[in-house]
Image 1 (cartoon, rainbow, N blue to C red):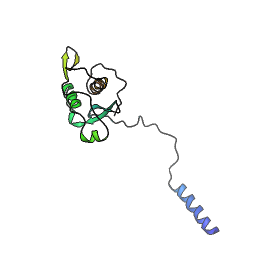
Image 2 (cartoon, one colour):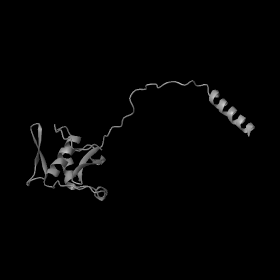
Image 3 (cartoon, rainbow, N blue to C red):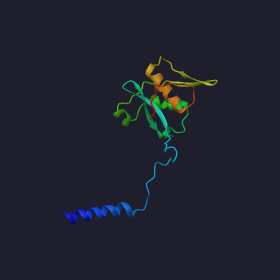
Length: 136
């Protein structure tokens, strides 16, 4: 047993001393890597709150196409995870100078307005500061 301990101790000493690398402290290499999200995002509802859905097929879509995607509703997969929409197909966006105006023949629910505001805030600069929009 003493012989086995001697061999283990010798192996440990050789392993530690053989690599020849001296220990160093932390070396600052700059900020960590960051990912950027480039795909279009539309906001459907999950439990009554805006919830982001990534839509790469809408990457070059304008504001009206994004609202049309909301009105078309979630995909089958998105529906399976509980997403839904309250934006009706009749909603249109009207450009009024430097503003986008939501035009609807009927009154929109608060949830529908949140969907539109979050989607446009995320995808288009419209001057909306809406803190209730989660980031994907």
